[in-house]
Length: 446
Image 1 (cartoon, rainbow, N blue to C red):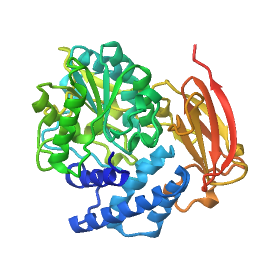
Image 2 (image 1 turned 90 degrees about the horizontal axis):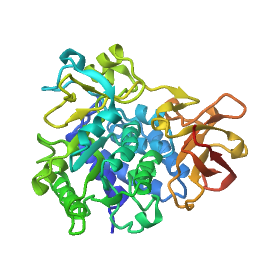
Image 3 (image 1 turned 60 degrees about the vertical axis):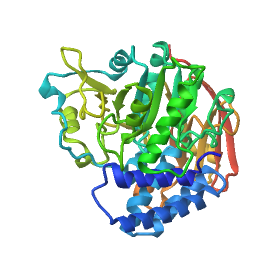
Image 4 (image 1 turned 45 degrees about the horizontal axis):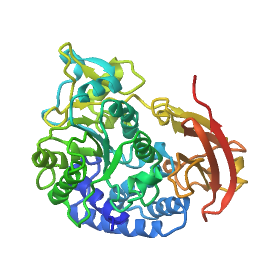
C-alpha cells in the first residue's frame, strides 16, 4: 500500500518545522504539533469531498473560520497545496511564503566574483552530460520551481539519462508507465498540473519512472535513509546497473553535506549507499517572493543589476558555475520576476512549451465558483488535467488573499496553459456536477 496523503502531508509539515526556512512569524513546538494534528484532520475531511473544487473550498473556508496564528502558520501550507492544485499560483505564494534571509557561509553575489549570467538549460545540461545522476529540488507550493525541470527532461534524455524518480510518487501505482499519464493514485504532488506534466513528460520521453518514497512510518533521518535505499535499489537493479538517474525532490533533501533533521539528507545517504555523487541543482532560494523583503539579498542584487526573463545560472571564465551554498549544491538557479496575464503567471508557459488559451466563464453556465479543467483528448477522465483554473465572482470570495479568479466583468475570463495537441475542456460546480464541455486543438508554433 502507498502512503496516505495525510501521512505524506504530516511528514512534510514536520519537515518544514524542523529543517526548512520558517516564515517570519513563529509558534511554539507544542502549538505547531497541535496545528499539524488539526490540519491533518481538516485535510482528511476535505479529501472525502467529491471533486477538487469542493476539496479546495473546504480548505479555504476552514482557514477563514480559525483566526489563530499558530494554526494558520501550519495550515497555510496545506491550503497552499490545494491552491496550486486548482491552478491558483498567485494566491499560493501569498498564503505560504518562506522568506530567504542570508545564512552563514553564503557565497557573495555572483557578479562580485566575476560570474556572468547564462541560460540555465544549456549550462546545466553541460554540467550533467557525463554524470550518472542529477538531482533537482523544488518548493512544493511554488510550481515555478518545477518549470525548469520539465524543460530539462528532453535535454537529459538526449544525453542518455533513462530513469526519472520523484518525491511522493506512490509505489503501488504499477500501471503508471503502461497508462502513460498520472492520476490521483499516482502520488501526492502530482495533483498539481505542472508536477503531473513533469511525470507525463518523462513517460512520453521514454524514461523509466520510479517511486522511491518511504513506505513506513519513518520520519527524520530514518525517512531520508529509507528514501535513499529505495532509490538505489529500485533504480540500479540487476536489469539496470548502468542507469542514469534524474530525481525531483523537495527543498533540502538533495543537499550533499550538512546536518538535516537528526542526521543526513536523502542525497547524502544515497551517496554513501551507491558511491555516486549526483549533480545537485538548487531551485528554491533564488526565487521572487510575494513581498521583496522575503527575497534573498543576493537575489535582490541580481534582479536589480541583471536583465533576464528566463531561468539563469552564473558561470565564470573558468567554466565553474555559481552556487549560493556550494557545500550542499553544485549550482543555484535564479528565476526571473513574475509577470501576470489575466490573473495567472506567464511562467505557466513552461519556457514556451505551453500556449495561453483564452477561455471565458460562459462554460460555467452562470454558476460560481466553477472549476475549469483541460485534459489531453487521448487520456482518460481519471487523468490529472493539463491545467486547471477557477472562475469565481467577487461576491463569492471570503478574502482578498484567497481569491482564485475574480472579475468585475459580466463574464470572467482567463487563460489555460496548454501544449500543442487536442484537449477536452470541462467545467464543474462545487458538487462536482458537470456544467459545460468543449474541445479545442492547440496548434504547434512554427
